[in-house]
Length: 181
Image 1: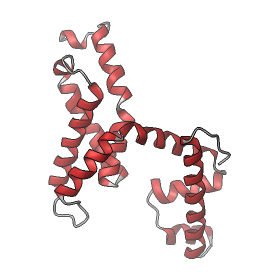
Image 2 (image 1 turned 30 degrees about the vertical axis):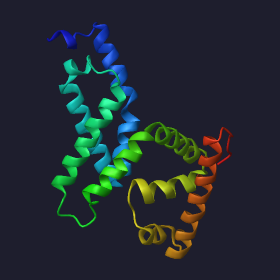
Image 3 (image 1 turned 90 degrees about the vertical axis):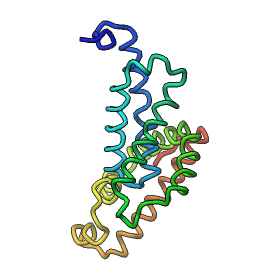
Image 4 (image 1 turned 120 degrees about the vertical axis):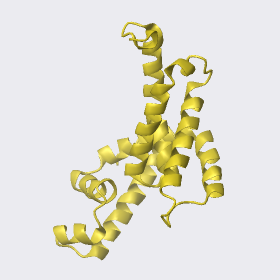
């Protein structure tokens, strides 16, 4: 086993702490550039593989987080290259601008993501399930409406109101206030 991978090695434990601390930032970064939760998760995993393969190089890195985000950026570029036939892929110049903005605000994204999770957790169960069905599971409004025996318009209005409530909750949390929803 190489020295860097010995279980008792302090540098190994530090490496694990650093890579763990970057996970939500890497995911949020990829999600913001691709707009696809599954692709963002794939990018996060690919980025982790690259980071682990460069464990020796990481010892010389002064800002681990920035280094990891740069690797994530290149993984997004590789993903986009593979998916270039899709009409939904951003132009390279647009992606570069987005990457610069997102990279500079990754800590803010982490705080927003944390606030979102807290706010979603505070939603009544039936609203939380509705949000999960639509945005995590990708179920169409029409299918949700059919299952709930409601009109698609009704479900759309419910989702709009939940999103507005979540937006207000996130805004309050980011400003330091607590929220009931």
